[in-house]
Image (cartoon, rainbow, N blue to C red; front, top):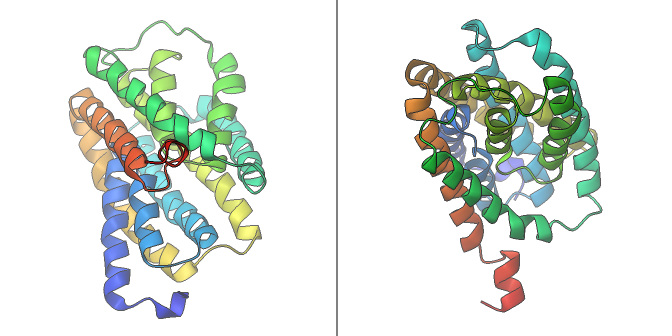
Length: 263
C-alpha cells in the first residue's frame, strides 16, 4: 500500500494511535510498541514503517522534552553531551540494523522488560528521592548512554524504559528527574535513527507528520500528568508499560522463541 492509498479513516486511526503512544511514552516509555503495529496494519512496507515511526516519535519525545525543561526538570548543561552521544549511538545502531539479524534481541527483550517491571514493583520507594549514584555522570554518559542509544537505532522498543531504569538505578536520579532526562536522550536517539532512515528515503511524510501532531498533543498531556503526580503515576505506568510490551512481543506470531520451538 502506498501513501496515496491510505483512506481518511485510516489516517484518523493513526492520529489517535499516535496520541495514545505520545501520552504513554511521555510518562513511562513504550510508545513504539503502540505506533509500529498500527503502521504495519496499514500495509505500508516495513522499512517505511520504521522510518515513519521515528519521525512521529521524534515529535513526541521533543514535545515532552520541552514540557519538562520549561518546568525546570532538565539540566540542559549536563544532559547535552549525553544527548550527542545518544544520537551517535542511534546512528550507528540504525546502520548496523541493515546487516545484523535482530531475532536474538527480540527473544531476550521480554525478559529484560519483565525484570525492570519487577524491580520497580517490589521497590515502591525507588526513585521517590534521589540516591547516591553508582556511576558518575561522566562514566554513565560514556558507557550506558551509547549502549541504549545504539539499541534504539538497532531495534527500539523499550528504549525509554531502559533509560529510566538506568538513571534511577545507576545515576541515582529521582523518578521524575529520570523521566525528564530520559525524554532528552530518547529525543536524541530518535533523531539519530530518523536521520539514517531519512537519508535512505524511508519516510512517509504525510503519515509521519499527521502522527507527529497526535504525538505532540499526547506527550504534552502525559508530561503534565507526570509532573503533577510524580512517582505516584510514573512508577505504576512504567511497570504496566514494561509488562504490556513484554506480553505484546511474546504473543507475536513471529516471536523468535515461538518460531524456534514450533509454537
